[in-house]
Length: 175
Image (tube, rainbow, N blue to C red; front, side, top):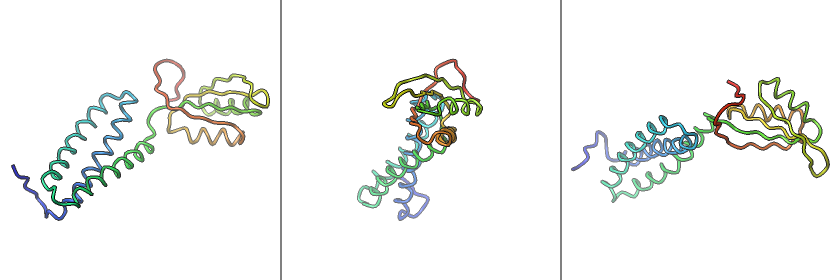
């Protein structure tokens, strides 16, 4: 069975490259949605990605004598992976758990975070130089930059860490 192309074969490397960019962008997003437990999105992305991959690999295997096709396939893979990461960063899906350790401004930071609508848990701890406030809050990832700016604006010396979380149940989540 031969593949009838609706365009000049000189365009094959570009077509292969673009198919792989889309395929790998979807693959990267699919993997991230798997981690977040989004079943419907994972199914749709997996279906779309595999259909695009079959089209791309069919063109490549049908034209193995063209080095540009192989380079386009590999280049599309690498570019699509990077593009998928950039898209995911822009979507900022999911939640992050923020931990703030402040040696002097813990109560002020906690109050500011609460006024901004975040649930904050305060703990007292002991650091190298004495007593510290340990603040804990889980927020939507798209709010992380704003939250970190708020914290560092009040306490530039605060130690801030962020971990990705998958909320299971209950608690206060800002809508």
